[in-house]
Image 1 (spheres, rainbow, N blue to C red):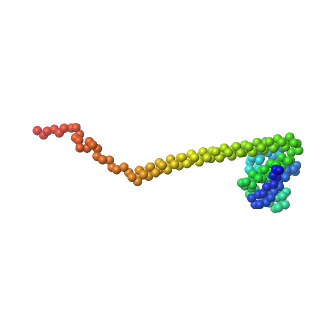
Image 2: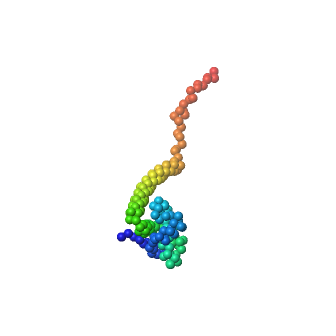
Image 3: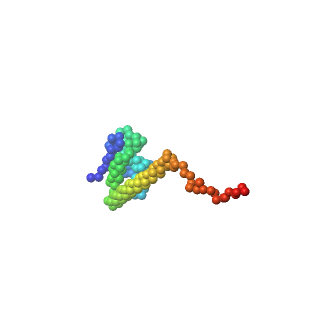
Length: 177
């Protein structure tokens, strides 16, 4: 069974609802037609718009419990956002009266999840590469720094006299005769 509830970071339980009234409030307040997949996708992928969508979907419960939009928004972060988004997407899917639209929406959501997973995997891979490069650069810096410290601490001994120091310059002394 798909999840249709979530608990915020304040421990409050929410059950998002999308009905015609909520859909009309979403359109009025966010300029998002719930049946326009592109507009809905844009709203869901933007964390601020997603928070507004979530609040509108639980607004009746929030009013009943004295929870303001600001308080609600402050209670959403981390894993809670993922759980809340899942619940929201599931109730949006339930809203569509046409089975074909529900299927299309479900497939769109699945494609979004797959792309998000690929993006996360890519970020993890790139992060590992960046960490390795930083480590190599740091090691190189430390070696060069130590070499410079060693040079400063132990300067080369003064140069010894050159082997030519005892020789004449090649000019001959003229005799004083």
